[in-house]
Image (cartoon, rainbow, N blue to C red; front, side, top):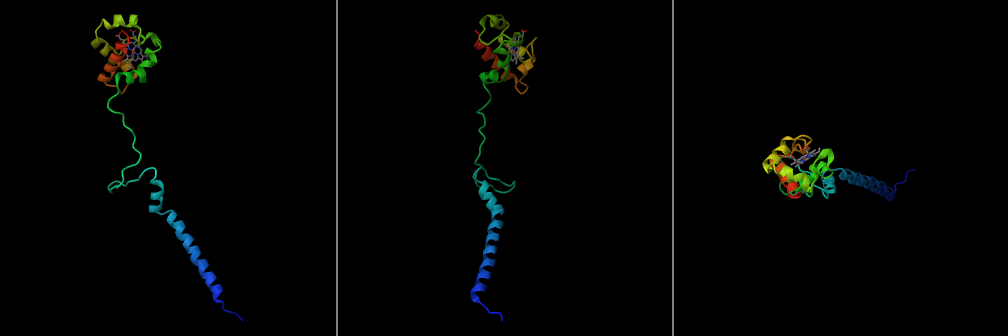
Length: 145
Ligand code: HEC
């Protein structure tokens, strides 16, 4: 004979409810809102066309304005003008720079921009414009007289 035990039935029901409950937790773990919360500590994903309420947490610092002559010099020209590679007149070498300065600054600017003998055009700084090359030349000659 089968005996009906309410306690056993309760146990089974509780078991079913518990497993449903944990299933819900797993489902929530992968829900968009849940994922969004977990990754939001680093940054916030925004969908184009929708409002993005919180500002993006990670802000890449943009350089403040154009590079200075010193920075351009250090990032490229120094490779030759610090060492004197290929016969480049060295930074600070007054004897090497004095006769070149006699040509006039404008001539030095244009020779640095368009190239001159062993001196490659723009000192190989492809993205540099005329003003940037000129400011690098100014830095170079100001520290060589
Ligand atoms: C690959 C090596 C190299 C790099 C990089 C380089 N130079 Fe030169 N530069 C030379 C050489 C070599 C000379 C000497 C050319 C000569 O008179 O024979 C020279 C000469 C010059 C002169 C003198 C030109 C003249 O008319 O007498 C200036 C000014 C100059 N460089 C500026 C720069 C600046 C500014 C940069 C960076 C933007 C730069 N150089 C990068 C090799 C280089």
